[in-house]
Image (cartoon, rainbow, N blue to C red; front, side):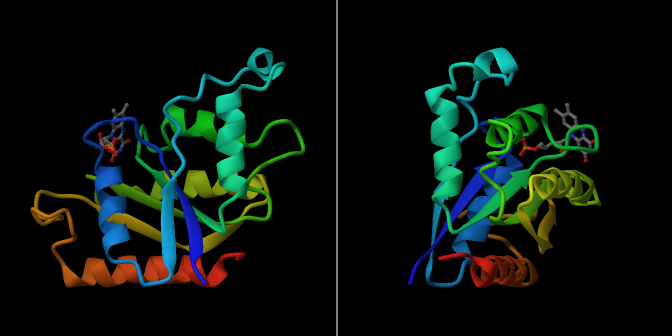
Length: 179
Ligand SMILES: Cc1cc2nc3c(=O)[nH]c(=O)nc-3n(C[C@H](O)[C@H](O)[C@H](O)COP(=O)(O)O)c2cc1C
């Protein structure tokens, strides 16, 4: 049986290190999982005015979350927390009130940052937001400090230890998925 893992990249950057990190995580995933990105870039800024006629793009975003067996949210670090664009997406996922698309869903958090903390503070803030929405937030996170030597020219992780950590991360998500 294939586990459908939906993932959200919290960066809008065309050169995102978080996207690069998650692409490398995917390369090291065990068999039996299938990844699909749930994009945040087309979502409007949330406001209650915008919610009156619930935008199709926001409904599609919620539907994709709900159709996933498990989810990963990958967060950059902006000012020691998650970027506004990602928070905006998580806010849309929580609407209409009482209909949070993450509720009951197994969700893991990943982060990549140039800092020694590997994005853990932002990842913990994302976990708080998801937990508030009653997601089943996995304790296991994948936090990565990115330097010039992190990736190979082919976009994989250079170090075996990082590859192994990525494989364990995806295995933990698959083990908690609701297929
Ligand atoms: C507005 C802004 C704030 C940032 N604040 C932090 C920070 O507090 N700590 C940190 O380690 N990096 C910080 N950074 C650097 C980001 O970690 C870095 O730009 C990273 O590449 C962003 O992830 P991305 O490449 O996936 O978009 C900040 C970057 C921006 C643009």
